[in-house]
Image (tube, rainbow, N blue to C red):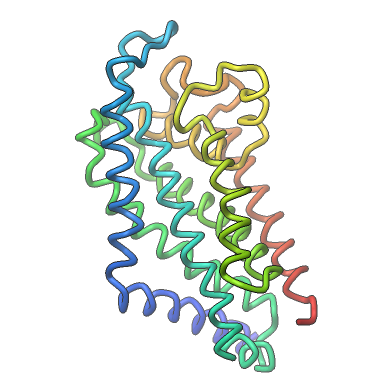
Length: 258
């Protein structure tokens, strides 16, 4: 048990040290979505109209989705280091050490969650510019959703990084799977089309975006912005179950011999 805790702590600490040694990485994950939010949001403001909610501004609508994108980018950029660690020999050293492979998974995910929380907090500083009231925002819910969303996305990233042989292959998987997941999460447009509505209901990033919308509005997402089935309680439940599931998958793939 002592070795397990040490392995988790060392891997968690290593992820944080990496982040602070590369400040451009912090800025890149925060500033790129910020520019994305401002440019795309400004462009769609004049044409965005919802029949159910005529007063809903697009930059307000888009902000929770971009916060989910910050978490997604944190997971992608942090789990790709698994491939770098394999190439440098560090991963092999961890695998032959006294800690278990489960500790490896937990330590890596713990580091990614910590980084994602820091970057999400930095991004939240601009929330008032999106028309989001800090008085209405439920910070405890935002924090819990950020942690659960980070576990979910870093778990997926860990699985993909473990089974791919190169950074190029990893980026290809990200482009084919995680980025479309974000686009079809209800982040950019209300899920009105039938099949998109169904995808959002089955999409972990859809649960995260819907949860953020509710957390920013005192627990109740703006009318028409999310599927009615995705209440804040359902989002928290689904994300919790998926987090447990993806950690289990990560442990299973990690026990594969490489």
